[in-house]
Length: 500
Image: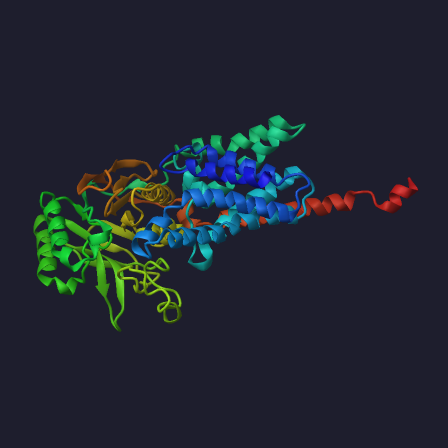
């Protein structure tokens, strides 16, 4: 019965994320999970309940993976659904591990378990999920808080720290709902992170540098099924040229990931025309396309043309999408996967920034912005962030909305404005607080225009990354153990009891 309740709670928690935005469901959901593992629950029982919670959370929240597997892999539902289910069942092991440890590790009281062990372990489980096996940092609880009062903590402790504070609040909320005494104290503790976060939203960690820049973000809306078709290549090139024509002269023109599905050396006249037009009009154009390197390597890149030239090649690749792990062993078995350009090489980890005049771009490509460390790496040198993506892989699902929410969190962590260009939407101009200043409709050719500002300065999150949160988690686990040992030390021994 409790496993079914855990599954139900997990199914509700994705409504805390975009496109729904009921952020308060995240602390309520975690409080429910904590309570389901309280009392005389064994570590094994707790692990199962954590796993069912994860199954609901991730099965509902990332079920859109099935769309890309079905449409661009093997178009059999028995295959796409089963592959998605296996992936979800695997990553649900992370909340299961957190729940097992929360019951296995000793604590002096249920209050310490709720306020020290559970929050630290939940946060560490999210961190591990984002780090192991190339990582999958999607649906982190902190990401759902970009529109809540807890958003004030994001530039300080990052999304990781927001998850930790949310989990502490959830533990205090669970205690306030069930404890026989100290309910007001627990309720006050539950509210404290949100009140302090609201105060922090008034802090400006960074300042503008130079005048505002005009921007045009070009969204081609080329269907994924025809994007890499040789027959559609000329139409794609012409579409982007036509959409851009009226916007030459804007300071920044941004095209999405692999907007041009062709190597630049294959279209020299087209590329030379873009460069000449950018220089003549005073525009910088940044566009996504594959680039070739030496030794038959090729990269997923952003190329900058205009008054200055620059390039960024994607560093953090998506397994099974942009490269095949253990290629020699798996390629024969998975050769039916019709994923174009699935043999990309990784760009360098430290590529610096693309510089043009007073602008210093910190670029990421698609899924990279889900990793805080990838976005923060070029900071504080970069004064403007950009991401080019192609969420057409996931159709009309929650994925593009969740991805936009993640970009907003990265902007708030960095204290930088963030330009986001996508093939089918959602393209956006995001301010340094993570608020969307302008956004495009989905699935239509569109040019999003507006202004943006370069910014300088360093947020605590840029300076220290996830380390403060991870250290705090370690201290919380150590504190629980210290409190337990002190209790054992001062507890009367059996001999003392008999003597009395």
